[in-house]
Length: 379
Ligand code: SF4
Ligand code: SF4
Image 1: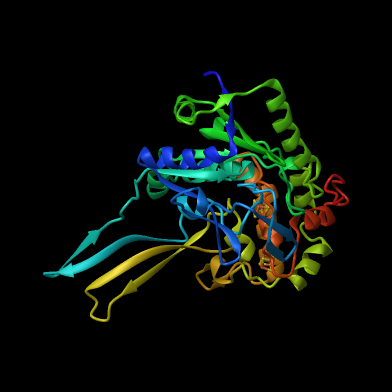
Image 2: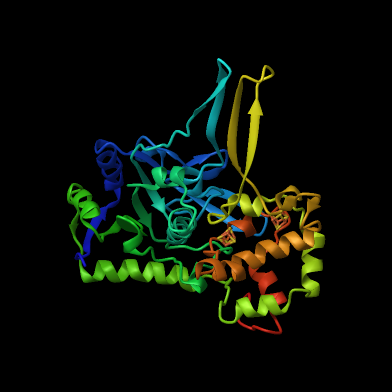
């Protein structure tokens, strides 16, 4: 196993990191503020980062607020995940053109440009790994996803603060970003004028970039302080999901009254599935011109909360909101384990923040499993 490179990086060197990656031909994608939220978009330099902003999150509520300490990554998570760049909301699969009585099929066009992601949180690394499992490593490999995923340079940032909606610590998916899933891990330490990053690289590609950044050697005390900041973020999380016996408890409570109660609140809007970094369901849409000489097939994100999602000949399988909510939560916390060996939830909390009525899956799991599993408590 290659030795981990560990350095101390002055805060302002973030700008050099972006320029170094851009200089190597990467399109750099990172967090930036747009329309009152932190989103992941192409960035030109460090000025595009959400420096001096933090987010306030709670069930059904998200706000950006200024923070005075100049932290580059002093927020948690916005509504978008990296799924947007690896498995986009809409993708043209092919175009069919008719000429001389024959149809010619064009596409799909795989996107292969090298990209660097900056600011990937630990739970988001786990979500990328989950999508890799589904879209790369399963029996139905997705060539378009593979092309976008190949060679992505990932700069992760461990969280040193947690939103009230976060529960990655209970699932073991954060807040410390694991080096083996990315190229560089940054931990930002801000204490007045003392503002720097612990920068760690597990492999040769990350180490080579760190070597370019005039990083200083890191001391034991630097490592300890950065580790303490991440530990404090883990300790501050009040929501949790306890996986011990959870799958069995959910299966044993398929007709629990709580499913009816949550269905009375749920709007079946599908927001939770759109913001979830692991959801991968899609639908197909075909378009043709009025002459019938050109047609396109598009793949679009779909949601198990729509009535049409489970439509097969003659009607929908899940006609009630209760059946759809139960399908979604049980897939995340129970049947995903049957399929892929881990839960389909990484504890990012987006579905809680972006649910317009503030439905909280940790609370629903706790209520439904109360008889079978006492671990899912909300502090
Ligand atoms: S189910 Fe909710 S908390 Fe879990 S990964 Fe999806 S959006 Fe995040
Ligand atoms: S749980 Fe919330 S976000 Fe999800 S479909 Fe229901 S109302 Fe919409």
